[in-house]
Image (cartoon, rainbow, N blue to C red; front, top):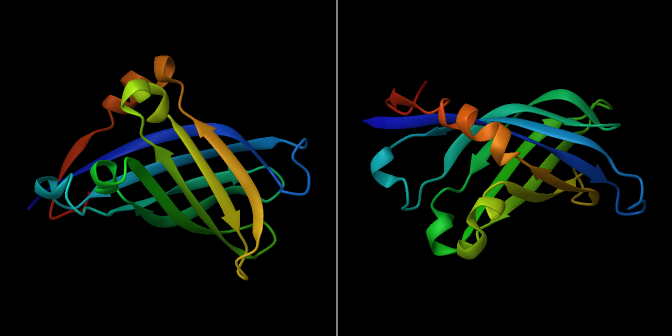
Length: 152
């Protein structure tokens, strides 16, 4: 079974809901593994892993989660969901999506809006991440690799 892996880097900012003017740096490095290329636009949910930094909350922390690649056709969105341990030892959940707009495809595929939740489900942060299309496009394309059996 032939799969596909690629990487993307997104940078931006985040803030706590109670302090919207206090924007802090945020970055996410994501490695995506699509287990079967034949299901790329079906119901494919890809595994993701990587590192996240949310200034003041998590410094270069590992994460694991999912990317809903199949939702791009059904819902015109690409949902990202992952969990990580903050610098305070608390487990946080990151839930976000790229909202796909055919007329503004480059911008919509390079912008990820998200929320961060604590273990009780309370919102602790709002995130906006972007990939610089001009600077990242070639690097992004060169990260695509085939994998056998859905593993890199």
